[in-house]
Image (tube, rainbow, N blue to C red):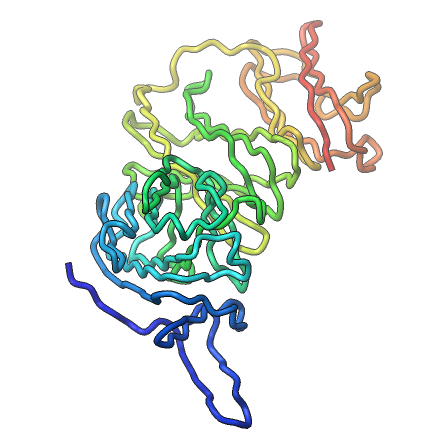
Amino acid sequence: MKTILTVVGCLAFCLCLAAPSLVIESGSMAFTNKAYISINEGRPITPNYGTPFYSVNTLNCSASTNYYGPEGMLDALTINPSSDLGSVTVSIYSGSYHPNATSSVTQWWNISTSNSGTCSLTFRFRSTYLGSLTLTDLAIYEYQDGQWQKINENLEDSDSSGDFSYITFSGVYISSTQKGSHSLILSSKNEHPLPVQLSAFNVSLSANGFAKLEWVTQTESGMLGYYIYRGTTPDLNAAIEISPLILATNTSHPVSYYYEDKQLSNPGRYYYWLQNVELNGHINFYGFIPFDYNIDNGGTPPIPLITGISSIWPNPFNPEVNIEYSLKQDDIVKLQILNAQGQIVRVLEQANKNAGTYRIQWDGKDSNGRNCASGLYLIHLNCSGKSYIKKGILLK
């Protein structure tokens, strides 16, 4: 393997008696023969003494690939991509690239790729670089717009029993277009909450013969919403966006989301990704999830419709909630919202309906157009003299 040494960042020394200051761009490093200084947000951080090093290597990353540090495999970064990431350059540095060195591993990495995609990352480094941390404390952070953003804490495997430790994270999305280069550190996962913590993302065949995607978030903050992507290969670059923006609720409580892909027609294997979009414009991807669609081109399977409320999502909601219900046969339908005391808040629908599946949205307002308060609400469907009820929580 060919190892190339490069100068990182823009380094400017202004050495004179009148102005003994050092001005360096954020992310650069200044080296002396005994120490190095890492820079964060334009400010020097306390020098760390030791053997400064950095190693840069570029390889094609279509399968699991090792990017070696100065100590070879012992401090390598292994990238195992879900699809071809193209030409990937990895730089491995010693030292702290963080204002609080005690909360992060004293080694950091820079990655740039020619293709976007999802991968697992295995970081290797000297166990002494952990300091007081344990591997299970760690998450991946990326330097974005002047601050560190947590991007992944999906710990898959780790070991710190020897002189060198390793830790593997799965489901890491790397964009070739967003900034082009990604400065990464391993730091305490308790420092900053993720904008969204996803606890489930799966796809199944719905009763109507569609691909049904469901995901559950434990917490959300600073989120705009979600998009669903679908592809015919595991390559995210070839996938297409198939959903409208599904608005986030930004709550600290678990929320369930649901989307049906009704555009599939040909049998085969498909791949799905969930994209989350933050209010500041940052994006992340989860997936892929493979799905085998075996319905014949002749139409949906002969699964009978069942009268009732199929689903409500998101739940909890703020302030909008989607309600889906089905009718086994033509019927007179009355769909209304009740409060916890059973009082009518609003009538959403009252009409003759043909057999089929219907979807309607409640905007969280009562019959007078006033915003409803947080609390438990009952979605009440009445048809053929029978009542069907599901509970929803408006959480502001």
